[in-house]
Length: 426
Image 1: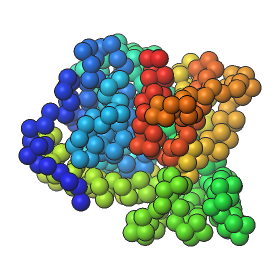
Image 2 (image 1 turned 90 degrees about the horizontal axis):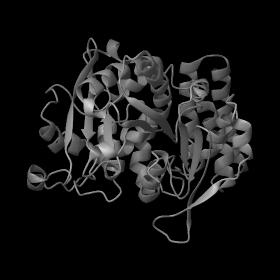
Image 3 (image 1 turned 120 degrees about the vertical axis):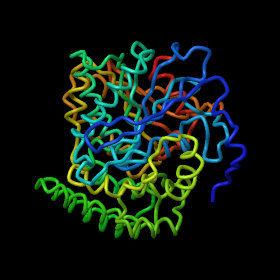
Image 4 (image 1 turned 135 degrees about the horizontal axis):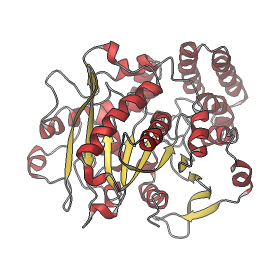
């Protein structure tokens, strides 16, 4: 249960020097998308960039999880977060795709089917946002993402680049950052076994079982049977959990909660539902209670997260498809692309990320691969290495140490420093 002080909530100003606003955009008939903007906590927000945060899933809520668990001005107890990104940027949370978080559809038929549909919806939202919030049209605009949010962010970034070139959206698009992102799902799944084996979380027998399950995923993908691949992926997650005594897919050094693990197994271990283990246990009371009351615009028939399962099911045929080709298009178009990944993440392990990066047709890949990375000191532990990074032309990669899937939750100070580096504040 959350320890929420309702009286405190009623009088608490979210952050001392800034302001916030929110609303809905009807992106299609019967499809309603919710957004929530925090202006940068600064003497002048115009001196700082605008960052849009996209959560994973599909079905994970940016306005819920990303906001209160990771980078927003307050945590789930409504206490100020010391590592809030609002200290260094205006932050736009969007419950995307429709049906996620407070976003909703009037019928299941209006849910998105693939990332192309997701990107089209987001273009409608961003067009309206920048037309109404004209003060942000010239401010550098970045898209940061996590997990499946990265796959959506790639497609959205490409669509936005084209929209800006055509003049249909007025904004200063400055780049996209892909955090522990589901860019090449098969590369992630095929490296689960080797990663767990190298960290002594699988023995030879377990490695054999996980590899066999992962190969079934690969076979389905190679045959173009993507819904079957999603089902096999779910089975592979279960095989991993059974052979590791319930390893935490989000941070291999953090013990899985048995109750939550059982819930995940009952839900077939879908990525959005795995992500919602924390969402529904620690956020539902907050989002469907005091936050809903504060916002004052949520329709009575809408429950925060109520359509999350349907969102994933609707996208299941697109879930295991890679978008590496989109990253190549972005790089060729001159878009600044950053990849960042947590050392202790399993669901999107760094080994798998490095594999798809090596598959890029980008003309700078050879030079990038030959470069040595640079160490970054841990902001919380003087003299200790907190991350490595390297960058060449318009591509960068950050390896974040001692962090799992949700980097801002595990290493808040390092995540904040990375944000400043990517947005050219240091």
